[in-house]
Length: 246
Image 1: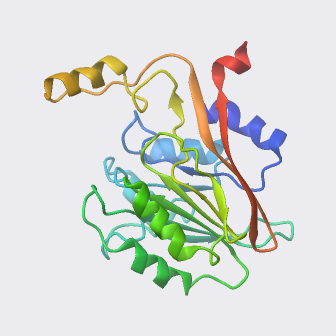
Image 2: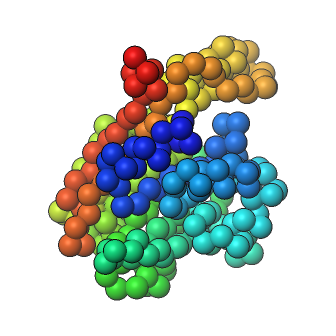
């Protein structure tokens, strides 16, 4: 979907930058070096990730060498890659800083995302626009981070749960927020996976081999408008393949 549609959508929508969480880009779980490079060539400027980023070993040297792909900043020291990137958008636009964090509630233990965010804010150049990807299970943890950062960053967006939420808002006329951006993948699915496989897992409580669902796909996200150091608007966005084809 991204390869087929993003180049055209980027032109039609006049986007200055495209950010994407790509941690499940390879078969619905994890991201390989090949998938990361394909997303980059398709027009994604910055890739964030999350708790599944380590599934494919070949992504580790990419994380260590490529500044456009991030892993959660609150992994312990020694993990490959960085969780903060500062990027030039060109054409007189301000710099864009992207922070990638991972939550701890109902997830594997990592360093404190709140303390990590505070530490990283001090290293961002003055005047840069700041977007935070909070990759977390609990909406309360995402919202709490947004509350801590409100007025100090331009956007806090949640990822991980695959279901787009209906709570997009602007906090203190500065910080755009949404609890989850949603998923890019098969529309008739359980979080991208085959419905019957997931149903069997819930009914039997036995391990199942996950399979990607088939059928028309969709892109989910938000469109954020930033100006003068403030978020002017943040709007949930969806693009459905079958509607375009019809």
